[in-house]
Structure formats: structure tokens, C-alpha cells
Image 1 (tube, one colour):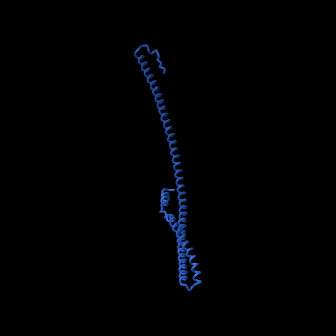
Image 2: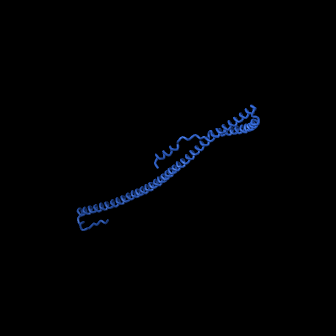
Image 3: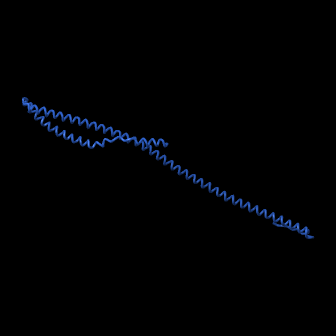
Length: 205
């Protein structure tokens, strides 16, 4: 996997996060609970008044006070029911938003799982490359040491051969010079000393 792919993977994970609804969820939950408790108390109080006014009103429909109490208690119950209905709708909206957020989080978790799986593959490839490079370097070092040792041995061998050749050549030249000098002395003696021709000089070498 090339570096461009790696950069794309890294940059793709830097997207702006969706604001969490949990930030406001706790105070809203407290508010919802308080409102529900308030509506529950008001509902049962007004329900008791409604029952009482209902009985009085139907027994004595001619009394305007009973009629007024009945209408007021009925209106209060309807108002409380409406408030409870609106609160239930608000809670349902919050639940749906929370479910959508959780679904989005689950999707991101799956995307992150795939993302980190790809990063793990890249990491393993880098580790294998590093191991292969170290092995290759060791092989080069071993080859270099072998070549260096062979070159050194060859150099020493050349020195020994040259020294031996020079020594042999030097000894051979020295022997030839001694032989030539002895012959010259012998010829000089023969020419200068009478009767020396009958002696034979031999040079052994």
C-alpha cells in the first residue's frame, strides 16, 4: 500500500464529530421527569375535583356554581392531557434523535474498525519491510566481509609470489655474475702467466 493511500486513510478519520445529544440529555431528562411528576399531581387533583363537580352538577344542574366548577375542572383536565400529550411528543422526538445518533455512532464504529484494520495491515507491511531491509543489510555486510577477506588474501599472496620471484631472480643473476667473473680471471691468468694453459680452472656453482 502506497503513501497516498495511507494519507487518505489518515485524513479520512479526521472528520468533524457529530455533537453528542448526551450533552443536553441529562438536564432535559430531569426537566421531563419534573414536568411529568407535576402533571401527574395536577391530573389526579383535578380528576378528584372533576368527579365531585360532575356529581353535583348532574344532581343540581340549575345551580350555576356547580355548572361553573364542572366546566372549570373539565377544562383543567383537558389542559393537563394536552400538556402530557405535548410532553410525550417531545420525549418521542428526543428518543428518535438519540436512536439516530446511536445508529450513526455504530456506523462510525464499523468504519473505524475497517480503518484500523487497514492501518494494521500497513503496520505489518512496514514491519516486514524493515525486517527484510535488516536481512538484506546483513547479507551485504557478509558479502562485503567475504570479498574484503578474499582481496586481502590475494594481496598477501601476490606479495609472497613477488618476493619469491625476486629472490630467485636475484640469486640466479648473482650466480651468473660470479661465473662470468671467474672465467675472466681464468683467461687473464692464461694470458699473463706462462705455462698456465696446462691448468684447467673450473668454477663450481
